Image (cartoon, rainbow, N blue to C red):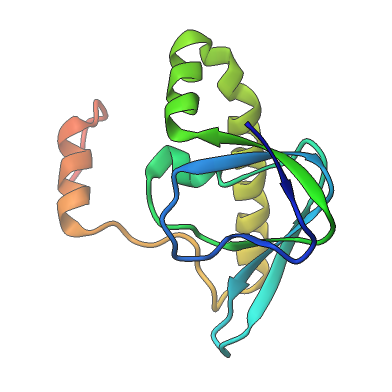
Length: 142
């Protein structure tokens, strides 16, 4: 489904429920996160053919950032059901999304290395560690 979005419209708000993603057909969008000081920090600008909201359709967790239209724009909206159907019919169609997510993770890791007080990698909870060990084919050395 194609949707037109007016300049200044907040498409997604950090912390809100997420079950759709958008591919930008035209226009541009600002991606921002709440800062510790209470304001917002711009973390990216997205343009034509970029995707946003993909994390929510993959993990179902609340939105990780706020996305705002910087100009009148047009997007193709992908629902979680659309995404799951596409992934069953054509798994190769997921590669562009996986590449985008990999690129974003690499950038985040690079930024983390430059700002040691901020960590995107959190230690696992003890229960998660045990579960991973039980499933791991790797021999544990003590």
